[in-house]
Image (cartoon, rainbow, N blue to C red):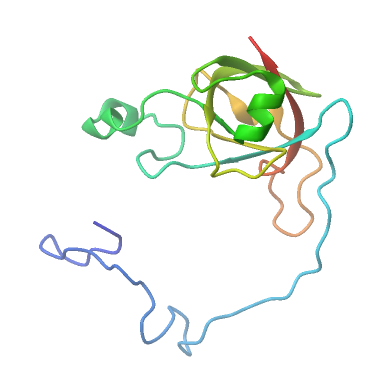
Length: 160
């Protein structure tokens, strides 16, 4: 079921903006922005990009969804790593690893997958057991969005 549901019987809206956008004139508003590199790029000591995000089955930090029947789908943290990188580091699917940044380190399980490109690792922020956002850049804030740079940080991966 997808939001919005306008009544209790409404099955949801699979495509939100079919004929018009939710603006006074019905048109979308696009803004061009200049590309800026991340304030922290991989280097010899921290050769991977860490990016964080969500899972379909969990909301925010999982404080509600991890207590529901939804949790049966995915209820433990993991870090996705490309098979070539995993092989180079001697990591197998399910191995415990550390993700290390200039701000600390977090322990998790490796999920070896082609879903992430080489030299990139991905983890969600739904699990208190793996506080991955502690490894990301809180400062400086993005000058346009005024939010922390949770999406790209330089890290290294170590076997636990």
